[in-house]
Image 1 (cartoon, rainbow, N blue to C red):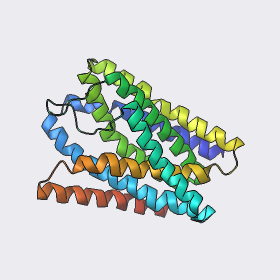
Image 2 (image 1 turned 60 degrees about the vertical axis):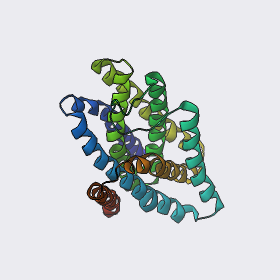
Image 3 (image 1 turned 180 degrees about the vertical axis):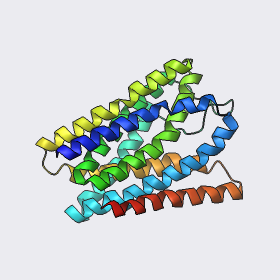
Length: 249
């Protein structure tokens, strides 16, 4: 259990530091960044799908079997993510701010991002309760998703009137909610028996929702054959990375 706490806290701290990735946008032109982000989003979509179907679901099915409860928890994760987006007006956008792609409601974005990061922390904590390899795989999937996400959020804050310094600061503050989420997850596990039987399929559901509802539609905005093929290759690579992490077990 001590190992789970140490790995979890280190992991969520690393995830929180990803919020400073906005610094990279200072020296990269918007058009070039947009092209890079498309492939980063593709890679993270593959990693999220891979973690859900290769690590999280097989682990919980091995422990509890694949009954209606697992299916319900999985669908609850999807439904919960949908509700979060609807009620907080949280659009997980990964393309930087431009005249064609304007992001209003910077403060609302901060609130939505804080909730999202809290859930990430809960998921990472629950993953380490299953095993260290599953926790590492889930942390990597979150990191790969957070890099393009945080760049997009940084653009939202700049458009909303924040200075670059303030945008970085507030992005980091909201990222710290991941630590709180992780602690809550680990503490609840001490008092609720077999909580991972709920949290792991729930986590898989949120990953499937993010990859399928937020990331894939973003990729379909690019219709050029060559770039679309590269996107598909990046998705496959993301899945292969998750597959290769099985060797850690």
